[in-house]
Length: 190
Image (cartoon, rainbow, N blue to C red; front, side, top):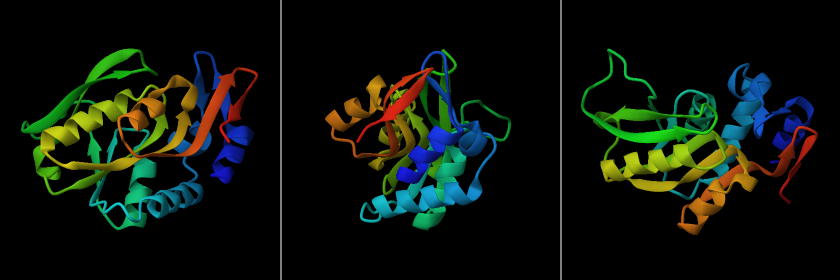
């Protein structure tokens, strides 16, 4: 998605440790019109996949997942990173390592929101090493549901997560793919 690449170049900032800051439009301050365009593009890419629900993990993936679900006409399901008093104790869960935060956490979703008949599209803001998607795939497997594919806003291709998923037969669609990134700039895959 050329418009996303241009927006990353204009508004993004590369931080130490291969961190790309795009909080000004993607995951802190939200450019809702632009995110809606991204959601429609994801819906176009997966129009033939029979998606029944969009699955994401809190928190940064929620806006894009919600708009993709709206464009697809299906519910969005959010996997929680932290237990809360109003969360069911009957959950599917997976341990996930966060590259950004450098720690493990247990992600969980109430069993009532996933069914074996579901065809789930995972949507997230970033794909680097693929740990969040691996955890969500584990949860999908526990539910006996089907993975329709994965859609991400930005893939850091040089970190290998997307390539590993594709090698396992997972359909991964990235709206922008970064080939390399340093504090001096970044280049996109073409």
